[in-house]
Picture 1 (cartoon, rainbow, N blue to C red):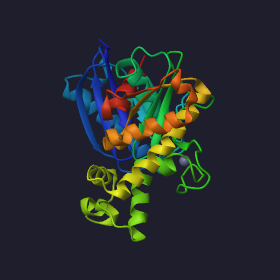
Picture 2 (cartoon, rainbow, N blue to C red):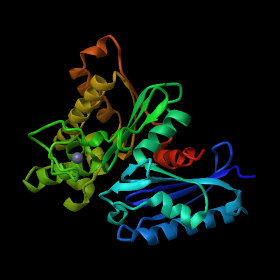
Picture 3 (cartoon, rainbow, N blue to C red):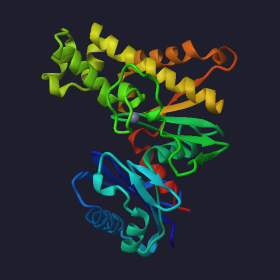
Length: 317
Ligand SMILES: [Zn+2]
């Protein structure tokens, strides 16, 4: 019975695989650190062998699989099954990953961007169930997302819709981003650049408990910022306010374009907790006059860091 599906989530740091039964329940799982220097062919060899191993662990062969779905941290041309551009695993640039995996496994293979697949999973099985229109925002080391329009994932003309992190929200602040501009929301409000801003302020001589919690400047991350925030540290407050302000602008712009105000959010930056989320919502409300009449819903994702893995599997028809 071909009822099983394997989902693969290739992350910038960690790669996860999950074996799902016919009810989308995960029955076996494995993960390993992503080798970012690996060649595209080697990576596909590795993924194919891990798919077979995972199935074998459950007493299954590839004949028992209906297909394989994979999520990549990359722009993905969905129709062609090609990773178009990525900043995390350089060898994936222009790699025809769908065909490469299909050649190795002999199974139907589906590939998409991780933000799109998280949106799909939250819409079908998570916090977005019951909403025909929603915007998913992944607030993590980087910022990504996905759009559900009229009950369906919207991929745009080239499969690249929903890359909300590169929305330009300032022409005066931000760090140079891989997308080519300074001042996209990722260059200000992502976990990486919020930490970078804290580091730079401390290097300039600002005293902060962030450094006490991180130990060294190079160890500063949003976890240390969050702990300092709980201790009412002024720099932590500034870092979080600055990040939240530009996310509020991003959500406002999204609502202006799509008239969608159901926002499902996930990702490690949200571990900064209520003080951060409340500031982000307040920034949105500051700009959105419509919010008085049509109050937005900001809903935490229900699937956590498994969202893109689950979405990867859900692609398989
Ligand atoms: Zn950018």
